[in-house]
Image (cartoon, rainbow, N blue to C red):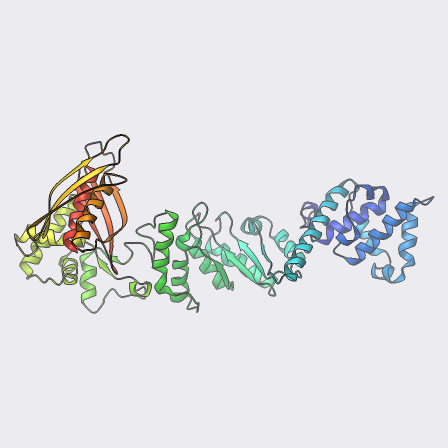
Length: 493
């Protein structure tokens, strides 16, 4: 091991103590630069030697200080014997650099402080964990130093040693190799593995660490964390249950709910294609997949949406087949003959080709348009509305709707134009003793490169009892698009 590694020895390592002792044995005047106390030494033999040398120096005897200190140490026969009849002190002198005494002293004091903190934690029944910052780079570039450091830590009363891939640099092969090395060299220690996702390998690295023998891994809800984040809890739980067959106490059924709760409070949106918890993860887009589900679940796997409190959906888009459409209509209690089913399917594909997002809530309107049927008329229509917005005044809205042949009109203010519209609508529904759904999400989309006259798509998510659904409005005006989506909601409920 080279001298640089020894100079970087962690505070509790005996090398700093040996070098300081060697320096003051060579030149006792260096004690003036050694701002330490005997109690700061980890090794009780080192503490005894330091106390003796300090005492000899303070007494300022005539003659050779080194010789006087050596005679005093030899006088304590048990101490001299434990020091290998002076061999250990000779080693200390050979290792020492006299000019580095202040540096060694700082290391020894820090070690003493750390021991004191651990002792204080133990006295209060607090467990102590140690986080080996940038462990992954250490294992790549200086594994002998990591091993040397842990040799000095292994006898400390530390409950868990945390192995972080701090900068997310590892791949699964390295994760397995490095974790295996740790467990093989220090089987008595409990290791945690902490993955980062900078190369999108966090979950794969967790898999490798567990296979290497690690039994505690760090995760976060939705993978939230600095930079690219950490390993997401939902993915790791699915990995453990399905691939590693390892028991755990996580309730899978609650994962989706917790993930979206954190999404709401953090303001960081979950990607629609994020495994397990993304909006589109359990959505079949291809018609052939929906057809396979109808035929004894030909596309079955263990990753069932029901495990996570979700349901399988069938997307409506340009790859939709008749099976997709039929599945969505079945959920609405509607069955069509083959001819009309084909006509509806063709219309959905036509709309999708225009890059319009088609939702299951749009189907009644598509049916009405395609079949020219009166089976899905709007029971609630917007007869008129007026919205005003003036500097220094709260926005106002007057709304008139027709419901079951009767007109209802109310006015209200709000924090914005759409909020004023919704408040007026709430007044109408309150008088009718009806309850409106809760608006749980509001997304506005403008085509890339769109100008001020571009179409605006407003997608609103509503919560109505235990049901959640979405409606869409399309208009050059953002508020008008939101109002169109709202009118669709009124007719759906």
